[in-house]
Image (cartoon, rainbow, N blue to C red; front, side):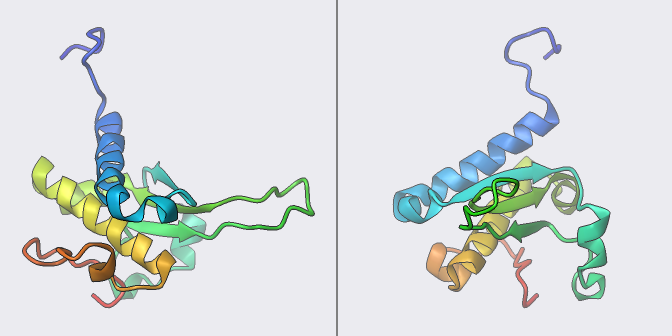
Length: 140
């Protein structure tokens, strides 16, 4: 579609849609817990994050968790929710097609959300890891 056509969606917008779809797949079971989590997309991890990350453990990270703050005493740093940030380009580099990308994004959302909850990914999604073979969790 040409960019002037209303149906046109950039690759970044299409990726954002995949993240929203992944979250929507979890909502029926985890709606109240998801209400406290924000989701964001960043092109690539920033240099500060990479400097603090063990690159030997698994290559370029696919996502990160930014812990929120409940402290309302400092107006310069207001309270914020926990945020899951997905890195678009590393995820795109790992997937061969749109279907694989969709499942990879879902798996990463499940893994990061499970980390926030302090549970195994299989608790968040009982079908996690059954047939996709991604398994990019902290133990992989």
